Length: 111
Length: 113
Image (cartoon, rainbow over all chains, first blue to last red; front, top):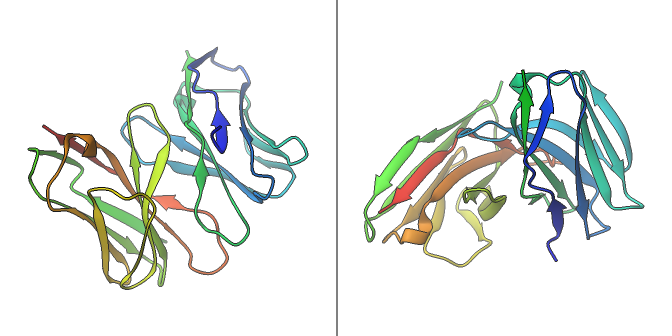
């Protein structure tokens, strides 16, 4: 079993739809959770960074962490064609700065 | 603001040839530095990380090595490339104290023929 599981998709949605992405993990000691966006042939860009459980909102993006279920989510509201990318979840332990990554979900927003 | 550079952007090398990829960070001091490899359609695999000059930790035994000759310079090397070394190589940095956020460079796409 992988430490972090993420459905690779692909996921295709019409412009303006809500995109829902998620990851599950097996290590209950993870405390820091991140979402990255990666455009084709580019380096990943940090989108959201959260600590422990709860929600965080930044513009059209909302990140949720449910530690009891070992499940994290990213929601993109009013999706745009420019949101078409691969989204990677990542997480780390309190005393370890190494990140464990999901495999990434490829999203296409159709105009 | 902080900036991370990687070069070259693209590289095609024959099997058995040496490799040197360079990463430099600007605008910060004493960063943690990381080398990752991303195979097509797969997640990021941590190869090496460094918490200071000359301090290298290897995550996966393989044909590669890393060095950190200066505070903000990180080099990935190989003496003899294998076909399996092909991939997208990413350098990343994080603040030394207390931050778990990592920031990635633009990457180097390596093809070994």
